[in-house]
Length: 101
Image (tube, rainbow, N blue to C red; front, side, top):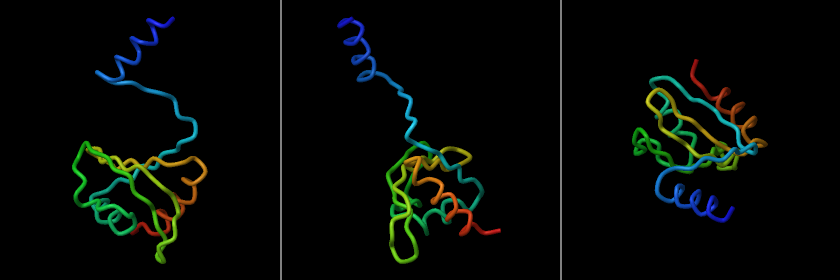
């Protein structure tokens, strides 16, 4: 058993690993103006985020109140926002409200 665990740790350090996270939820933001849209709502600079990269950010109210802490991942056709399952519904509602028609 110890050998299998050691091999799994070595594989995670040298390659990749995955784990199920039932405490997280996701929001997909798509469209040609998604960078500027998110840049105006999140605490991190979305204009400097390169495709294939990710960074932490907070979704804030107009007065600077915290709506949700998020991880933002820049994918080829979307930005994927990842956050605590309990905070993501409020974040999705705010993004829906703020989204241009």
